[in-house]
Amino acid sequence: MLACTEIAVDTASSLTQQSKTFSNDNPLKALIGVAPCGLVTFISPLYTGSISDTDITRSSEVLSLLEPGDDIIADGGFDIQDLLDDVGARLIAAQFKRGVQLTKEETEKIQIQ
Image (tube, rainbow, N blue to C red):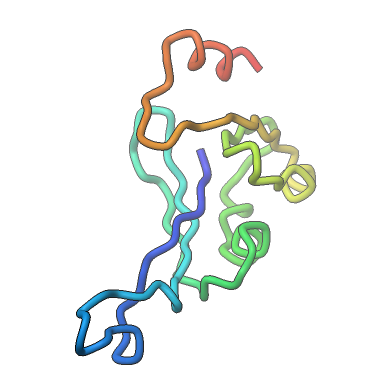
């Protein structure tokens, strides 16, 4: 599975002295790869939050680790099939529910695709 995640960065300008509230004006993003067993297998360098998920995938070198015939699960909005075509891998788009574990039936459906 591949997914991008954002990390909030606290800077002197994003922390107001009066309210002590944090602003997420300067997020950093990383691409994370996870094996079916749950093992984290890839962590990209951090990129500025304005970079697209596709650009992170392209520049992070994760594509060089893939082999023809590999299946990559990613969120339905993470459209990288054109990049995967170049290495002969296939994108399996899944609609993940934040904070909710997939049911057995949902897991089997993804595995069958």
